[in-house]
Image 1 (cartoon, rainbow, N blue to C red):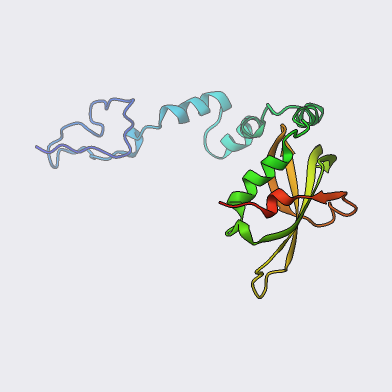
Image 2 (cartoon, one colour):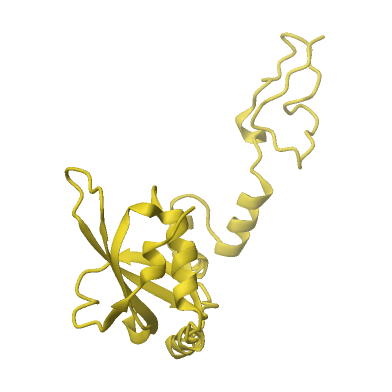
Length: 193
């Protein structure tokens, strides 16, 4: 006796008498893989019931359902706040940095390889300037280096950006510091590790 099982058989159907899965004697007159006994998956049966036709007509009849399902999958409901709310939240974080000099000193202590190399340091008071979604308090920082390496420019100019009254970022200045009212910043020149 021999047991034959077809890979096409669905786990949701049980074979009937003489179908695939039945024990059959070799040469018993039954085809161990009859084409009529191949079953479909429950999903395929459900689609046939919904759309009404099998084969080539299936796609034509189900095209509206398939299109609707594809579009529903692509649709998203945004949980992002409105642009007005984003701008309001941005502006709400604009607090004047009361201790901006000490914030800059603490940052520059880690920024410099050798903080004793700084000379001619100047800083401007923070003021609101356009940036991102609205305005940010920025301060301009300018200083020179005593022992500038061959390709390093002897002077540097940075924009210091404050968010929530605290130093958030330091970037190279482009045109943001044109016309800044600089004052001497001797504390930066005396900075040590």
